[in-house]
Length: 226
Image (tube, rainbow, N blue to C red; front, side, top):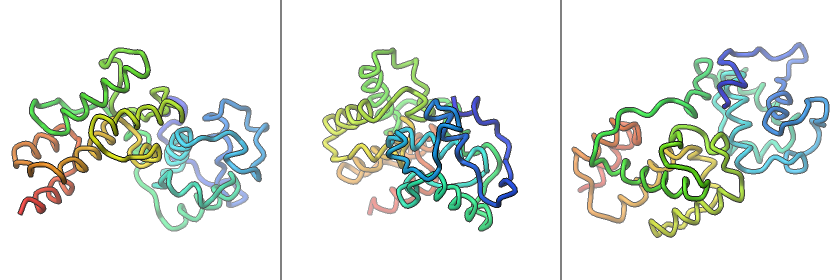
């Protein structure tokens, strides 16, 4: 898991002044760092969309930054992305060491029956387990999809299954911004709640307790009830 490979300590930029992201990339791609040319594009190096999520999470864990995976296409080589990380460090776009990794592996809060997000999470977990040929209870719903073994092909199949169940039109890229089953369940809950009967306060509180919605997201849903 990411937390095993990248200890929750912040690494300072090397003497060159540019953060070194090659070791993290090598770990994700299962290559030796010296095999990676930092001037080549991530695409030619073999970094697919879901591995990109794992890579950015690893960089955030290494440097304590708060960079999103969606920023990666604008910095298409390791060298360019390393400069972006350095600028983020200088601009103070950091958080407590280890926070980025923790969001991928943090344990799920005790589940209360009846919450809308809980039902969606159960369905998503069952669908993912079916595709991965495992038991639903073997899936850590707070783990990142790459950690769970979801590559680009499996990810596309999973998103297609979610679309069939909920009538949504999500693309595989949705796994970038919602990189775990719990995060995706909260996203689908928000989408479907907009087109159905407004949620009651107790159900929203359940979702917040289950850590499937933030307080701000729950308040936003409540504001649409009128």
